[in-house]
Image (cartoon, rainbow, N blue to C red; front, side):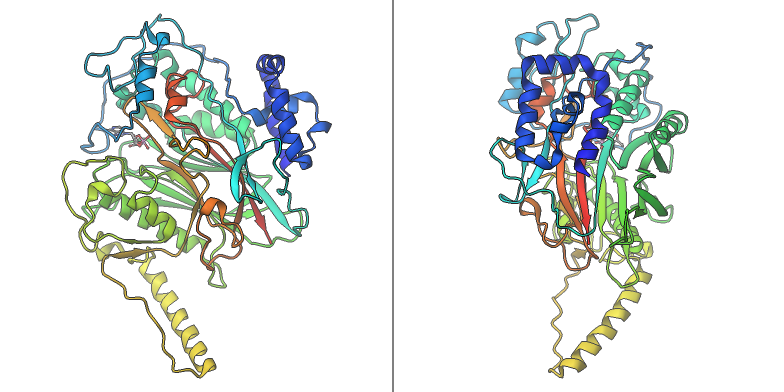
Length: 551
Ligand code: KL2
């Protein structure tokens, strides 16, 4: 499976023969391939033509395909998401200062108030820095160290699980592709970019080329603009073998979330859009959405699991409105609970992707992963962790959302919760009479400020690079460089990756994380002019993970 995937990735690299030759001349490609082969003989790289070996290097080098190099950034026609503040939390290290003042940037202009804290703005006609080539490597799970590792020469091989009777491998990509309307509404965030690279005609071919090269079986895309979706994105992805499902935001912003899957790998069982806007609930006056699919894997033999559930969302940006973000998340979780619930009462394996506009280890992030949050005394500006010192300190109300929303504190639809309670009671009565015990059922004391959901999820990424400990960055522009994008999944019981918690026994099977495409640091990104740049055409990086579903 893996080597086949590598082959498919590799075919797309034939077109980048110049890079191939350069890397081989430098000896880098060969060296890296040798390392991979020595660690993973099951990849059988020896048998492949040379051109199939390159994708594992994963150096982006996308050609400038644009014909039309001019762009007119129109003034914002609509107010950006409510009255959102302009500053996101921004981590500036001394290293970044060095970058801003590096000799390479002599010709860049720094505006007086941004000179020390923001990347330089580009002047048309200024000397070019290197093209945006971000080096990202495949990291594979190492059974021995129980860690994700870039393959090295002395690394033992234990990946192939040859004795697994029934297995299904698939890859998932999560990518906020930056809608052109939002780019133009928030043009102040992209002053470091040459106008030419911000044109949709430049960006779309690059984004499509990235998606083609990664060749994921499932794509979770955010900020997919409706007109571009209809005319370019959907038709192009269909040519690549994807079936596409789309949910546009409510309100006036014409972008939304898409989930696309290879029809050769999955069949659509159901598609469930989620709107977070409710006209009768003042708290829920924002237009964000989610999309939840139930997919049936196309196994070559008898399927061990009937379905997997894939969810995608883009939560509210506003760093101060953690109350809205948490409610939006609860609404998404209620839909996931509904869709993923099987007849036997357990849940099918889950993959939850998206741009959560929340940083790692923030209360919202912890809640999503751990399945519980006590929000007593928590300021709404602290929920997402986007700002270290949020203005205002309004505390979350108890409860956060009104009962009229119809979603319980367990993030379930009230109806489903009642049904579940009934089932549980019947089960407990049965167990008590069987054991003939004193029938003491210990119920954990539940506070009114306790939020819960049914799942415990693991994150594909660990948010800090394993070698340097530097924070991984998924989005970067002139005001922010943080992780806000994630791929979460329900881990198989024996697959507690990188100190991630094991899923509760509520899942019917689970997923093994086989590998991921490594992320990079803020410094790495500013070394290629930040995002978007010549080759990376969004202000986010794509996240990519490979999973195995086992019997
Ligand atoms: O952070 V994002 O970018 O996940 O990449 O999600 C939102 C922001 C997206 C959808 O609302 O638009 C961006 N300052 C900075 N970014 C903003 C703002 C703002 N005031 N408003 C919207 N976005």
